[in-house]
Picture: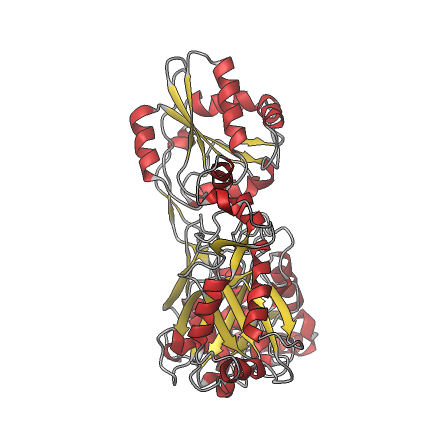
Length: 442
Length: 123
């Protein structure tokens, strides 16, 4: 085999091959990017040199196919990295520098995980320190890392969490979902807490719930970053993290609680929608990119405004450019202030979250220009006069196409939160990933 | 060594330690912390497949993993290599689905018909 990769992705290509047990894979690199480049330019890349080694690309490909294997390339066995439980003793100042320089933090000051602090954290769970909590993959292509209760506790201490927060953090870690996905598209993750623990921890679900105002929201969100980087092997820029811009949501990972007490009657809390009991405490995690703000000051019904607003998500990182309507990543989310939720129920007859979700899933469509752009085969058929595509050519580029933006499987998730100041909402492209019981980790 | 001398030496050592500890500035104190970093599961090494003795007479598949708008690269690889190595059969194949998806049928076809593969992820 002779694998070819564009030069921008050398680190990730080699790290991925190593994690799959092929650390000596014979890569050939070509100029980046290739996407949308004309054939003549691609030919130049092939006939030119590898931008990293300076050797001719053709020679490297031929060598990858025909050069006899070295002894190293024939090796079998296991690669295992030994791990010490404690770091070498040092001064606090030096250790803080070590944590920062090794990329174990988010760049901000941390609390060092001394044995005493970690021991205090461990008192908040009945689970043993050496119990495996979960497994997390650095990126979708790489093998999983596994981690214990004690390892999670060390990272919780670093983020400034208190023992009372620890069961939520363990549940979060048990989902196996990291907060820093490796896509070049700069994804974000979101965590929503439901159940009695919201009030026990004084989690913010009112004014400023998604902002930097409260301890629980701050430390829980921050711990997720540390778990991802240190226990899941993710978040290493260039190898396991490739987001071009990064996403500012990553700093706190959009950590908040649903304001269950303000849900209109008939609207279930999010965790109940996912099959948990009302009295259970649960953390749920989501993946997405974008939140669009709206406040309804005009006379149009809210659900119609939401529909129009969500059409704009065809331009977000929701995977629409790959396989519109089919890609599992095409999902929608609404974060709704209780004022809006009440009006949706009482004035617009959405008696349940599910009814609103279904209506939006059925009525938010790709626009025609994107429909043709994403599916050139259909455009070709339309120009050849093949129905039903040919008749669609009469539609204006900005009008609705027949294709729904959100796949029925993913749909539109709805969470109610906010300070009840005005009829606000956020519409976003966040997809539900998983939920985990917090009570099980007490 | 006399018994009394031994106790004296131990006493001096303890006093010295106490003195050093008490007079040390907080920022100079050495502490122990837990390692916050986990480790990957052990990775089994996979020996690489034997290489070809020559290209002549062989069939090589050129597989496009289907990153959007990069297929032209693979067509060009096929053209360039066909010109340079005309005694080798160079076959361009597009993997099924998006670049997220596996394509077991193609791998079976490749095992049956090809002696080598160039696989590419344009980007």
